[in-house]
Image (cartoon, rainbow, N blue to C red; front, side, top):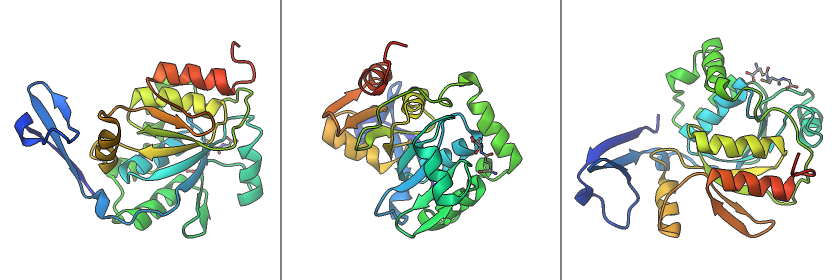
Length: 244
Ligand SMILES: N[C@@H](CCC(=O)N[C@@H](CS)C(=O)NCC(=O)O)C(=O)O
């Protein structure tokens, strides 16, 4: 696997213009070989919803491989992208992946994970994502505390362009924003930035700090940090009945 390897170092070992997480008197030096793996030219497209454990497995692999993905949310009763999946693949089953770089499209979380590992990694699948039913159960348990969230549709206006979000699967704050994006059926372009991602450094260079979640909405020009503020913004801008 294009492994992530953290180590605690003295702050003087990290140049001041480089991002590093602080840990007490130490800094966390993060290294990953992911930059050496093949990167997709166009973002992978995934149709899914937050509360689905099979979708969660795929999102975890997306974080591991540091992929940028265009997510099309398919909450229960969502009127826009659920019918599109039926039209493209023949059934309403999630997750469904389309890779515009290769023309490959498929259902089945295990097949998608294998395809992504083979195409954009070194073929290795982390043990926790390769245990079949047990993986689905642990992925389900990971979402248990937020049961019912990010599953059902809230009436919304779908914007012409996807909202860009810098986030990663393991962050509880990113999850809150994703729940709202999914419930409002808002297409979003995820810039994966899990620990060890080279995109953290790019972000730090551009913004002078690193924090996720962060969004840029090309439909309105809005750019913002802070999960609670992002959620309020998304509801106020895109929900048909923002106060309900
Ligand atoms: N074996 C499939 C199972 C996928 C599955 O059962 N997905 C559920 C959501 S968790 C689904 O599509 N249900 C139909 C629906 O939501 O309408 C996989 O691993 O991808």
